[in-house]
Structures are given as C-alpha cells and as structure tokens.
Length: 339
Image (tube, rainbow, N blue to C red; front, side):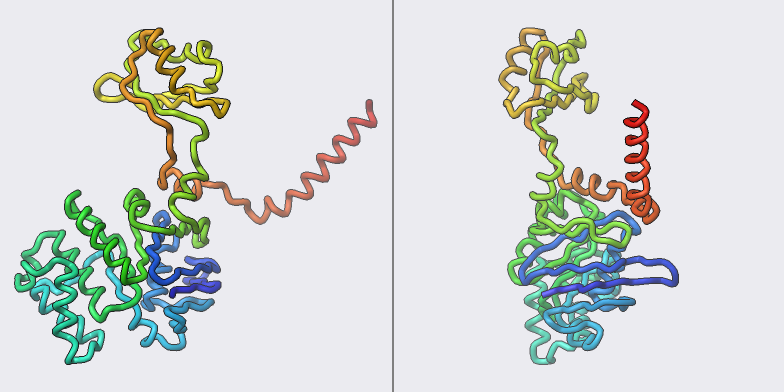
C-alpha cells in the first residue's frame, strides 16, 4: 500500500532523511515515531507529496508519487497537526469545500460529506461556525477533512494533541474504527497512545530508521529481566539489608519517593526464580509493609528511549577498530616475549 525505497531528502548540505526504506501493508495502523528533528515530519510530508525527495522512490497503492503525483494524492487523506481550518465556515460548508478541492464527483459530494459527518460524530455541530467549536470538535472537523473522498491512506499528525482525556479517548476509538477501512500512519508524542492503537511502529532518528517492529516486540527487547516493582513503607530503612536475607536478589534500586511517604523500589533477581513469595514472607518478618508488588514490564517509551540513545559509531571509530585490535595484539605478544 505504501512503500518507500531508498528515500533521501537533503536541504543543501544537511541530510534530513537518509536513505530510508519501509513498507506498510493495506489495513495496517502504523506509528511513526522520532524525537524532534529526527526527520519524521519530513518523511510524512514526502509521503503526502507536499515536498519531493532528493533521491529514492515513493509508491502509494503501487502508484509512483513522483511520476503520477495527482493519482497518488487521490489515495491520501492528511490531517496536519495544526488543524488548519476555515474558522468562519461551518463543518458542513468546510467539508463541501474539501470535496470540491479533492474533485469528488458532483453527484457523490452530498452523500460523501454526510457519511464523513456521521463517521466523525459531527451531526450536532455540522451547522455551527467552526471558530465557536471546542478544541475536540475542531480536531474532529480536521479528521473529517482527511476522510473526504474516501482515501485509502490516512496520515494523521498528532491527532490528539491539546485534547482533554475524554476527547483523547473518543479520537483514539475513532481511529481504531477507521483502521478497519483505511491504512493509517499515525504520528504522536504520546507513546502509550501509539502502543494502544498501532500494530507496527517505525522509529526514526537522525534521518535514519532505527527500528521497525510491533510495540510488543520492542517492549520485550528492553524487558527489565527478572525484576519486580514494590511499593513499601520502610520506617527503619531495612530494605537494603534484604539482599542478605534473600540470596536470589541481585539489586535493590530506589525508583521514586511517593507523596504518601511510601517508596517504590525495583528489585532484580539473578535467577529465573519468581521471588515474589519470598519478598512477601521476608519483608513481613522485617516489619516492611508492602503496599504494591508487581512484575516490572518495559513500555514502548522505554524501548524508544533506548533505541534513540544508543551510541552510533563514527566513521573514524569504525576505521580505527582494526588498528586498535592490531595494536592490542602486538602489545600482548610483546608481554609474552618478555616473560
């Protein structure tokens, strides 16, 4: 459905996107993640056809976006982060205008607009002026604009930014429903949101792709091993001495002080043994009150931070490797001769 082949985007001497390739199948909901300046927005703008790549090929539903841009763009609905709307129009008027811009056949426009209004829950506000609508409804109008013409691909840039928890839940639910009929690329800084909605994640950093996988697989790769999180009240500060009492404990690390006076610790075990039973028994004997105990699970945020913070080797370091290895070898041989 969407395929990027060796795509590069340069601005003068600066490379914003560096030779990236990936494929998104029909019906997938995919999260595009990356820190600020990573090349994420540039990648999305190239897919939408807003900017052209310096090198490489972009296929939208098997249509080359560079050779046949109009045909490719017909397959794309784009919801930008800034929700650019005509504030003096009603949602219905705005969507009619979008239908004209997208060249929806005249006899189909009315029905298409009404279908989009229904899908995005705009029935009650369809005839109200957009500038008088809440932030949540404005987001819905922007999302509705991307749906006009029934494109096969939806590209949603920060679709829940600035919304309250109730509105976020509603938009997330809407995106999941839309995923049954559309291929979706979702960009968001809320990683828990991506984990809940997306089946696959593409992480980009410094213009290069550092990971393509499911959220579950990425989380499993940075799993904290055999560790548990425990919240305790430990008035006599005995918890650090529990390493001597429970031999399987390898490390006890303070994670945070909580407002109610309790503390959260991560306890790591050096075996595959489940030490929760031992913790319950021995902590009670030591007078340490346990308020919460659970296995430590990595999140998509943990995986994201680990992937983007991994040290990249410079060209000089790569070139120097065999030289350093040879020097170390000669040094070792010299010591052996001296002996």
